[in-house]
Length: 313
Image (cartoon, rainbow, N blue to C red):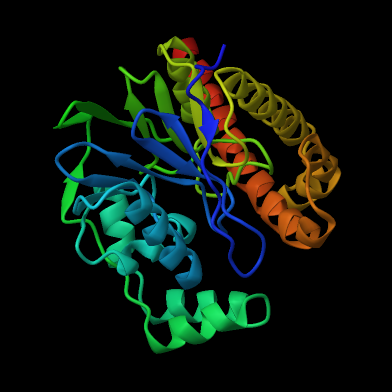
């Protein structure tokens, strides 16, 4: 059951619709309507901590207004749950904050150069020309100043914030757990409105991470994308990943190539709700995801064969 204080806060009208900034626990706020990824902020009494940042410049201005409507405390930290563009591009709009992320995220963000910028501009030039033009003039990748590789805790004011590097989606994927508030920011380890992006993932590690999440005590789960949910969303993710692994393994054992496997299993994408205008992009990403899982199954099957041969000697 969700706590009684899960409530809608007044929305701020903007160019395309409205924000829905929700206070999901005392002094913990979430926004699920921005382009890029779900984001949040925590008012600690010793400064504000952001969980990921708005990707689009206009959204970043709105987000700062939303924060200032609730507190005049300094924005001290940004926690990036991974290094993908939807989570980190907005770091540049909050230069007063120190970025915290997994060391693998730092390694990737440090490598983002001209090719990363060109891909971003090409992708958004027609979809969101205003944002693309602003990025063309000013795009800075603000890398983490503080990194971690194992479980880490922040204690600010009356807030305990645990950073759990669980991997799965990427080696950098980090869950933000607030035990007293009984909530987690799951990052892209859990999504509810689109197929998970598997192309940089490890599905076996992902399943292990989801099992671990189910053992934690919390009532509210903020996914990387989609609506706020609960622990039940981890089981749906696990079910999908198990299905993909089983079917791709079967295709591999039947001798299907990577390309043929991706074509034969493309229907699995219908497990998820996808708006019509997003379908071409979703299809491309899912094909890439299936190719990644095919590689995993090949490696797992090869390792099994080698182990059997070794055992017979």
